[in-house]
Image: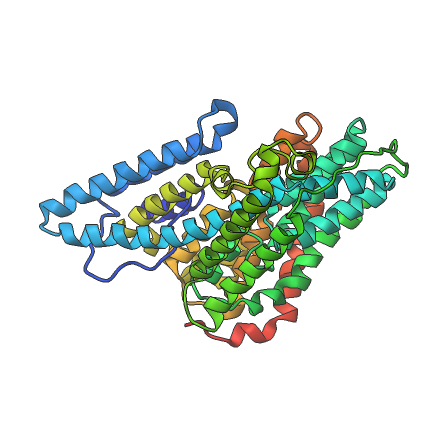
Length: 474
């Protein structure tokens, strides 16, 4: 019986989960049934393959999509035998609706990021930083601070990759500088994403669920800043006090770059307005923002397309290619493996929740342990599993917590992944980008300093935002 009670905790160490409450209707408890055990096994194997992606080169979306089909197939067969097929069908449709909102929201955000990359916005920023001739220590702080403030608007993965490109361009031969600089960027990007609904997928999920208002997230700014600054202060003294070789690289942004950035900000404002003032899902505002970009792409094609195709020098150099701006090319370049991975995660975890495992997990963590201890543990787990699956689990369990506790779990899930290089998408991506220079063990050496920042950010939140712990949610 003790083993059965621990199974949900093992499940938390595995993969992502659907983040909506269970659909109405009577369900069957299958946690002690062979189907329940089989579903856990399938889920564990699928997530093990996800974790081994770097070695197997098997895209992470493939095993979880297959696992989702197997889990719901087993559920459907059993419920059909009990004459309850409609209940299982309603549960699947419920999870699909929740996934569609997340999917469309992320698709729009990714499209805008790809559009800015196409207009050379990020390349221009990188070249400017390299050209200024900063010292290693100045670059350490500049890349960290920029990562902290860019990630709330873009996302922590894109931000980390951009700042790492700067480090490699300036100090690629100095392995110590690159390793410590990459750690600093990962911590800063994850911390910056924790206080904004747009900074990380975990905060986005909490906001879209309606648990925390848009403006309320910003009370996490100071705790997030503390989370970044504490380890950065320790790492500062390990950075060589020297200057890298200067560079004269210059990158000119393509026509429309600034307007794409303004349209992205307008899209964010539209999504917030739809949610806060019209009480509509934020995804509706994001899709409206996609139309802004579509019309702007039409304008660029009408104004510059003919000149570019005709070989006009102005058109060629300004637009950079014969087709000035094709919105569907930007959509095609979205992280489809990630988006399909979310589909598998939502359906897998939805199935496990439907079976009854999440209710067991919620009882163990949030009733027996207490909300604060459970939420601190969530951050530690996110260093092993990645914060997205862990936050999916918490949102699916939907424990009865105050606003302060929901802010705490948003903070810990966002910054806990910095404890290990494999704990966040930013860390994993930078290990590939700076291969051989930034590694799992180079990050591990600074885990104690990062852990101090993690603990300090939690204490600052508990002290500074004490009033939010008395505000109920719902």
